[in-house]
Length: 260
Image (cartoon, rainbow, N blue to C red):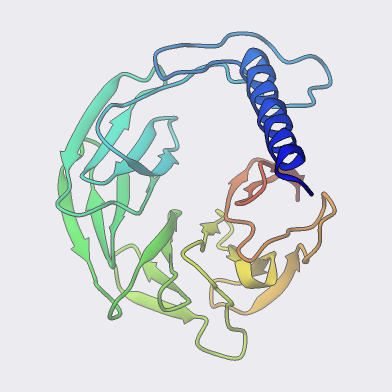
């Protein structure tokens, strides 16, 4: 191909790329932390609609939780904070290291800092500190009910179950029913019936287990269909809700709402 034709081809490619950028910018909705979008989705909705954006303005955010009474718990690079349902700040505690997981049960808030769990009261005052329970631990998720506190340690591929005094009751994942955790995405949740749900992300599924770790069943398998989980580390996050649970995936902008 001559230099003349080569130059013409390059110019055409650049013009097409510039045209795409202009088209994309023209169609894209601009959503910033200072704006609130209040439009409602059509029925049935085929995409998520942002109805409100909340920016705490306290640095990078790592973890979100909701208490039994609807308070919103945030864990960041250097803070733990609690907001009420109207997003008014109730309390804030400075953290010396990044907070990687946060949850609440009853009057207690549990926040993970690397391999340690801080126990706070409803006013944000620290009452206890548990752990570390294993060397080089990285707690990526924590869950609690009236009887137990469970946390997922992605670095050691284990789930620890503690009683309400912080004593270890069970260590799950060191037996033949091990977890395949390729990266730092490892979620756990705990029902009021003391049933554990664990995201075995390397196997692309959520496992249902007894409190001692014995497996009862699982949901999900590798694949590209909507009912499957694709990629190396999915579901990246999930949470129990009344009547089922919700999953979120990395690498694909998809949230699933599942029944029991």
